[in-house]
Image 1 (cartoon, rainbow over the protein chains, first blue to last red):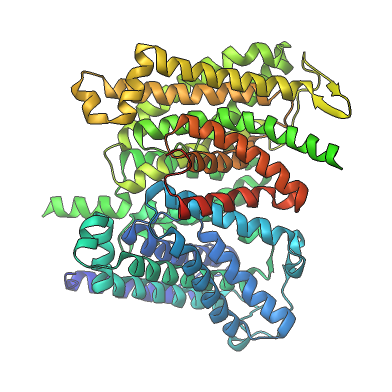
Image 2: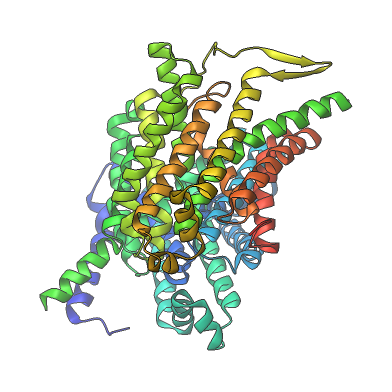
Length: 321
Length: 285
């Protein structure tokens, strides 16, 4: 990892200040909502990247962790009156344990095998929640309204506090990803990605490091799930456990550039405004159009520009020098 | 009670034959080029809609739209191989995994956009009604579709074993570089297998449209089930996929009968996870 240049430091500092003052300058709930969705999916894209980008485990089942996070904190709050912040940690731990439980049998699977296993896992979770009376099955859960405040993780008068919370979550995820990529674990994961056999020969326990990757990724994705349930205040299997959410997470990471730290953030910044705006513009008439655009983007990026936007930018940058 | 069980068993066998035909195309593509076609079941949906529109607009019975579906999907498969899949064959692993995923999402949602997400059905196909064997009733379109699927599977099997092109495909499946050294045009074999695999699922779509609901997202469940079949049979094994298809059909219906119908697909997916864990090479791999 190179030291960042002065230009880069200034650029990131200006970007951070701009993001911090955004809700103060831009009034109106829609722009803030779009930014919140950008951060939410950027965060999940970063978490996916730890799995898919660094460890080459192409998970299409991230939505299971997202749903487990959303459901755990909500059930704890509704049935046992547990504070959502504790629910957030509980959901994360539960998702990490589920990740480990699914990760151990699947840790030897590569490429397509892992991708299909992750979909099968997420579908089992969805089918189960759709029929599980304890979590109100397909009816879904409406969160009880608490007085607003950071302590209750609930705000009614403005979206700005949600904006800052998810921004902090995103920064935390980026820091974790950066830490992993610059430390031993990142090198091990990349070695495993290059060649299972060689890494094994070097004495790297790939089962262990892939397990760490799954657990960290699951924890962060579950945090995003709890955030989503506290933000929308209603969850059901059709909104937090369906395959298109997993697809969107993968797409965010791919579009920006898989295996890079900032790639998923760029991907989310491009994709989420696109999908939120097409949804508002086209409404019910546009059913399917936003997903059609996604599908076309996935096909074209993977066939013609697999390095993503960030990869493209850095290649151009290098050529310029 | 046991009559009901027998009826369920028959149903499982019949749907299993359909599954086999769908999965054989998928496993062939996998065997030849190590690519999972995530859009495979969306090709099934295209076959079903083709048959539906031919019936609704021109009164053509699904039985006669089989060749149309076969040719249409053959061409589509060839084009998708040529312009998308062949580009990623040497690219990064992620691109190979997700490219056909993109195709799948695009096709399914284009169908939602064009034809709405409604459920449709072919009301009165040429073959209609039920056969009664004592107390067990057998739906005629279901039985014909399943018998037809078995016939097509057998035909493919003979094609691969008896013709020169078929043998070339099998050779590439066994060892790509040796096949290349023997003067086989592997690029052409790739395109051909992708097209044949797609064509088979198109035929399955025409059969299925005789009795199944037709809607844009129909590919979702069939797709996941066919991946499970391919894994269970052993990736790339055609005989394996044929047997595993029938097995999964039976397991799914019996699972729904003995436990809870809502969980019948969950049982199949759990079977996939257990298979790749305990015997990653599948039953016949």
